[in-house]
Length: 543
Image (cartoon, rainbow, N blue to C red; front, side, top):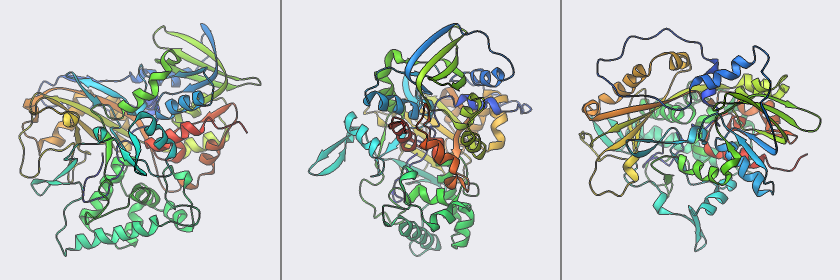
């Protein structure tokens, strides 16, 4: 989700982009007992995306010998995973002059956590659904956006194409019985809440100030200039830092917790203080008074979310993109890298040999592919914790009745809710009269719920989504036609304390041999820019 005024634009929920094979993340789940039956309302819908059985195939393959390979193929560069990092890697290698780039992807379609979907004839997202305007350090992203025509130079300024920016109203919050503009809870003039908003903004501004050689907080994070202060921030939780700073206003804490759950999949008592501050300091800061630049909260978005972007990354690959391939083994040899993958359509093993393999997979998955796994990979995978997510698309046949307050927005958040709100897929349309639409609701789940996400029936989870929205939309159930949900067992790495100082993550990013790693996991958290830049950097010359 993006933030609206008066808070500066943040960069949430595009973060659902750990690369492809995220469904494979369910392989570590242990089934939990079934919950009580869902409500008696007869819901229409179900799960979408690849079956978790594909991901479990990797786990099962470790318990015995594999059958004989049915077909052998070769590539100069083989990319494992067609999420944002994998697709960006394929693009970078082709730009470097390597035409023989092949990509293997677990799902039938590319995009990873940034894939699009269709429901009721309307496009909608299955995960990440917007992209903020890039900051200076995200130069590869900016260059690509210029190629797409989303950015252009005009009178010495960089100008976004307004046709692709989020339409107004962008964001609203339900609080105190009504909808208000923006997502930051309102604060009365002279109130203690407003004073704490300003104090937090001052702290962020101080940390955002330039230092010798760059900034303390940058996006991607490895382009920042760390110092003793940022190292100390990474070694404590965000909650502990806020308490030490005397920042304890309940509305501020709710907002910051919501922001962390939305971008990192976990709250301020779990993520590091570095991560909580990076959320604001790497971009445009935190503003409580609405005095930020006019375009500070501008975001690109489309009905299918960031599926619009990944579709354009994938389009040039054509027959080089091989969907429905579950990678089972990777082994580096003297003259190349051997990969074994299961073809889900033909139920047979494929063997691949490549000069270079780009492993654009979550690190906990990558660690299972190598025997033995490189020490840095084992250490990095063991250090990461992952957040499960649920994304629900709800097809409604007519606009919902409105409560008191501001008009419907693209992004709609409920104060105090366990969920993260919903976006309206048809908000970007130019239709004159509101009608049927798809609402995409997001839930970052506690890690303890991962087993239930696999075991419990889809109707239980649908009921959970509906109960979260019932308080603000009591007519939702009568308007609901169908609900389709995507579950991510290990959707994104959670930036817990200590990750930014992990030498293993830095070592994996620096590897330039026959096997290279490209994934947002290398940053210890998951956003579009981190994944895209990691993919681009994978094509750097061999050392």
